Image (cartoon, rainbow, N blue to C red; front, side, top):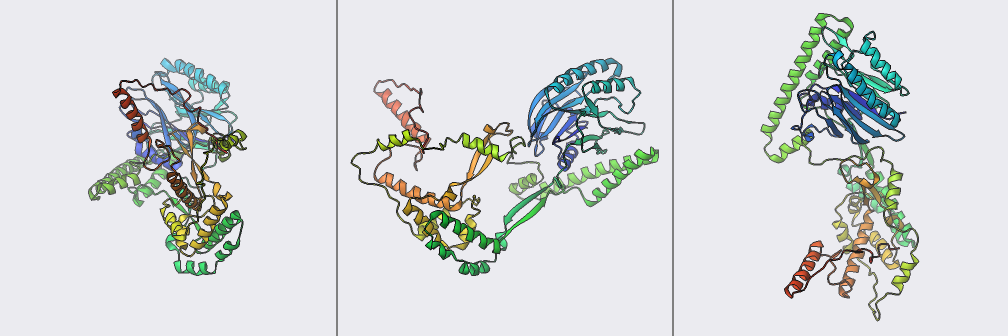
Length: 581
């Protein structure tokens, strides 16, 4: 089954109705929403129409009225196929890449000129585009305001349009009026899909934004609550430290001292520590629900309920009194929301004493956001594919490189007796390096720095024994070699696996061991003057800046004595051995 939800809406000026439209999108979380009559031009920047979780694709008329656009969930992988704002048909097309198929989605708007004048041009325009897309793609969806009453099945224009759809294997699924006023109820907003598609839900919604209703269809079950977020964590704020100390005294950490195998030591330590915290501070899951806007009061919610009921009543009765009652409620709600929002924002601006508090309020209201969150599209959201790609491009060789081993075996410093050996460390040094770890990220072993520090100094002798055992045996535990990799997008709209960057989260104690090893190796290299004087990489106090200064100094020195300097970057990296076993 197609895994997408789509809607189309004649917004009658996106800037004027942006707040209401944004509320609809945040509530429904459709994957793609086509918008017509946006009435935008180049002066209105897309950043001012940003909605969290969506990309805006637009095709402006750049003259009075018209214009089409689409809000596309940034979880989707898609490409913009372009469109046009011709007099007979304004259109915007995108191709969406789903897990098992591709889908063309088009947003259409036919300006309401005299039907006789432009209908044939509109139909030709429509058929030319549809014929190309239907042939080239698995699935097809389009919709928008075509200004033809599709409820009037005896009208020749309606018949011609429906015949054209049938010839391409398409069907129009909306069966109720999308524009309702006192004089008429017409179906002007179409939603067209491939004949083999069967939506699980479709219809019309939201009569209070403009004189057009939103049309929608879902080909997947909506999430139980699109506005909720689940978060699992250990609540250390409610930790009973006295209870923790009591359990620490009876937990057999000392048995680890008698285990000889390094990997078994590490596994036993992690297991005992996790069991301990599962008892005193177990994981708990809480659900955060997105709050309604603070200016939407209980009174306004009640008025909205009454308005929706009155609209349904009018659709059934067609009574003038019911229509007037609905219009009165609709107008009163619009005025009430406008006044409540104005009052709230004025109070927010006037009562926040500092700029920091004011900007935090704006971030809470999603008026301003410093961090632009980028979500990996569903087409790339496959852990195995991402992992395979990162391994393929990591440069890690799975087997030993005998040529490389032979090279280093036969290229050693002669008559050099200061051989390197790791030295043992005490508890004070280990505790110092533990305090230096600022990240609270949890690695694959599920042990955090917070858990370790809460158990210090009781478990320090055990950690010291594990670290010293690693140094004595020149062994790095297998469990500490495994990192939890988070794929982070390199750009705002990732389309390929190459657009992702791996961020590795290492086990906490592996960081401590690495810091100790690094410190001892650095002291050894400096003491024996084994590093080139001009090496700038991976040395404290050196950087790319010092390297460039050295190059500039060489050039100036040669210039002073009348010599010419030539740079050759040919084969720069060929002499460097990149792969190490």
